Image (cartoon, rainbow, N blue to C red; front, side, top):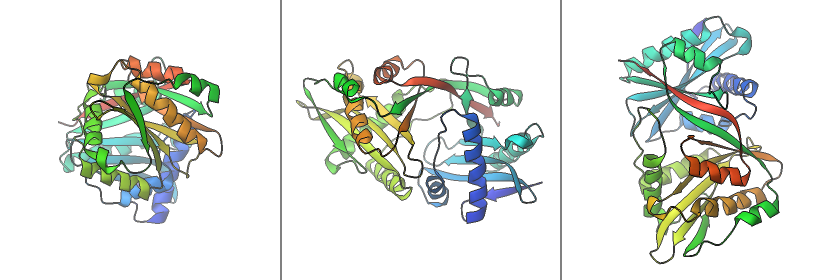
Length: 331
């Protein structure tokens, strides 16, 4: 067995690497999540100011036994590297994950990172426990945060959406697709930064992302290069012209049955006016109108984010798992 470094430049190596990751997710998750192959390849091979992605594979001859996907943050959280381990089912309990983890720790330390962070997507909806969390705890990782994974199966009946689309006095809704309009770019950056500060993070070692117009444009360009599409609905306070709330949903034609609720945020000073449901319901209607087959929308929220979970409940989301985040202090 030997370790293979994966950077996306070799199409065959990347194909084998990605197939392991996707196969494991499909085996373990009732509703698989994650990027399609082209999304992942663009992320790994592109030059990005905020993140660098690469990976490792453990290979025996021509057989891939397991992989580690790595995200290296470049603007904030530069002390942290995020890792996802995936081991082919028939090769589990043979030390594959441990060997990959040891290789990841060695690389992380060599590049000056002091925190190794990882998500478990397969936890029980109530307890968050799984075989992966047992592995993490046994190897010194500490549980730092939990989020409820909810799904909504589309299409939602029209009458249900209509009942939720009620006028919000003093506000108007605006919509855009792949690019935020220039006139809203500064305010949109402020909202994105506000969400990064306000979103519950538990005890994670994390710095809130400081969004700028330039970073937004780079993120939009990356999404387009990945083949992704995005629907955004925002609420504007008419009297002041202030961008008060927004939501984004999207996906990729590579995985047409898999959509994501990317963000939803209401400015602190504008809360209590039903703006969460006011932007989410019409945004959902817009993305649903373009569907050519049934699809599932995925979203994650910390249990303490009760207002947003309540909005999701009204739309018909239901819980399917608990995502937990774990950290290992590398000293």
